[in-house]
Structure formats: C-alpha cells, structure tokens
Amino acid sequence: MTFELHRNRTGQPPLGGPFLFDDTGVRFKNGGLLRCAFSLTELLVSVSVILLLASLTTAAVSGARSSHRRTATVSLLAKLDAIVAPQFVSYAGKTVATGSAEERGEALRAMAAGDLPDSWTAVAELAAKPDAELTPPQRAYKAVWESVDNKSVVMQENESAECLFMIIMQGGIADCLDCRGLKPDVGDQDGDSMPEFLDSWGSPVGFILWPSGLELPAGKGERYFSADLPFDPVMPSAEGAAGGLMRPLLVSAGPDRDYGLAADASPLPDSFGARDNITNFDEEAIR
Image (cartoon, rainbow, N blue to C red):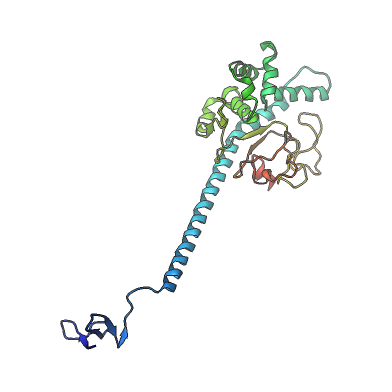
C-alpha cells in the first residue's frame, strides 16, 4: 500500500489536512482513517432529540388550542348570560295580582318558568293553555312547539339546550340585533331539527333554570346558592351561600363532553364529568 500527500493548487495542504490517500483512494488524516458518516450512537441521540422536540411542540400546540377553546366558550356563555340574566332579574320588579308576599313570589317564579322554560315538557304545558293566559314570549314558544312534527324525538335529547336557543332566538326576550354574533355558534348536535348553541368542543350549551344543587367547584360538597327561593320577600342566608339567591345556569360540558349533572345541577354520584364544566358563574365564584 502506498500513500500520496494531497495538496491544493497553491501547493499547501488543504485546511484541516494534510490528507493522505492510499492506492485504493481511501482518505486518511494524519495517518488515521477519516470518518465520513455518523455513528449509530450519534444517530440514535439525534433521533431522540428530534422526537423530544416534536413531542414538546405537539403538547404546546395542543395546550394553546385547548386554551383558545376554553376562552371562546367562556365568551359564548357571557353573551348568552347577558341576555338571560337581565330577563330573570326583571321579574322581581313585575306587578302581579296576588294577596300575600309569599303568593307574589310563587306567581313571579311561575312567570319566570313560563318565559324561560328549560324543558320541552314545560313548553308542552304552555302550549295547552289558551293564548289569553300566556305572555308574548310564551305565545312564541307555543307556536314553535306546534310547528314541531317529531315531538317525541325532540324530547329525547338536549332539551334544555334547545329551549335555550328558542328562548333567545325565537322567544322575543332579546333584540335580534343582540343575537347576530351568536349565529356562528349554532348547530344541531342531535339532528332533530331543533338548533342549540354549541361550545368550542361541539357540545350543546346546557340550561338549568333552577340550579339548586349547583356546587362550584363541582364536588366541593357545598351548594353555591341559598336555599331561599328568588322573588320571596326574604334575604338569603350568608352562610354556605356564596352565590346568593338562585339564578339560571348556563353550562358547557368542557373537554370531556360530559356534564355530569342532575336536573338540579348537583354533581352525579360517582361521576367526575362535572369537574371540567364551564359555567356562567365560574368567574364570580373565584372572586
């Protein structure tokens, strides 16, 4: 085997040289074989670093997407609450023909339940009454119910969410100018031709008029609202009633798409579905 010193055009050894070439064309540096590729260990380390960076990037993107969805859902609930809450509060100042203060409270709650129904059963009961006994919103609900052909199908799923849509978009309690920004958040999740407002995970926004069992946070074991009923001539008990008098609940099922709530908004036993719910009272509860 013979070696030849390789030089550049100036007659000097190249940068990093000198290099020697044997008669087979294999290049050597300073008498040793010059590696022209990565070792297996180096390749494995490089691949591991790339996979780690990819996983970190995926986690960051997923977290940003989840944060955006939560922010958008909170914004939607705030828009809906800005329509429902003033309507509910307005009943406290209405005049009804009753005797005692307790009877007045019952009459006002009945009016609120009629104007803000959270089930198709309640709407069906309104539809059975003559128009003379109904308020303008209730007559609108009656017309909606009478236009439904598949009543038994409609009553199977998403009742409260569909009623919420009807109240805001078809009941006349809100100026339609206030509702234009809500149209992109509308869908029909159960395919029964009765629309719902959808959160950022594609689940209907639930609506509970009398959320007496609500706990914030869910599983805390303490009811958020006072046991005293709204519109009665009493002050709510301060102890164990951070939310004061009961008000309508708007709720998103959150990322797991499981509400985990009973009809009175209390957490279902042996269920963690309510832990990631988003409600219209979340910000208020942490103040």
